[in-house]
Length: 161
Image (tube, rainbow, N blue to C red; front, side, top):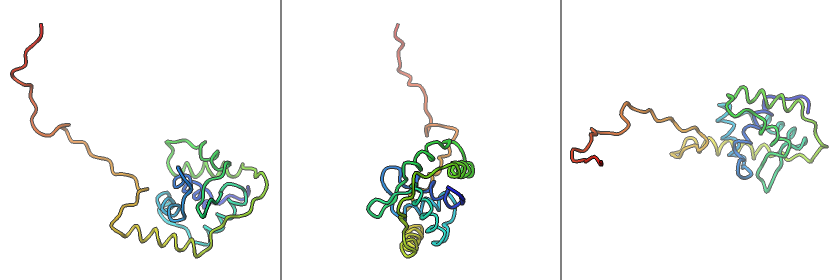
């Protein structure tokens, strides 16, 4: 697959995050893109990336939802788990440049209106009272004492002999 764009690697990583257990809807993919990249690319660039990846068999569509194809699953499975985002994007881009398509497939490209609606739905959900479930949970800061209050050994304890 040549040439490889940054948006292609970002989209694959976002889809891997959003479609772990089932095919992901567009707004879930947009939430994952926002989490990984910190911003959502334009609808035109996303549409082109969907077309490039789906023609090469890396993205499949199932009932209006999107999932990774077998080739993309192999690419994502080979990534190091403890790498940071930049290293993972670089790894995906390297694998994409070495990927050889097994023949062209029909593209499954969402329309610009669908992409715009998904981006708007993600932004509306972020401004509401609910939480983005894809956001990392804050770590709990441990205090010096593990248990609150003063703990001491009971005075009536007997030793067995």
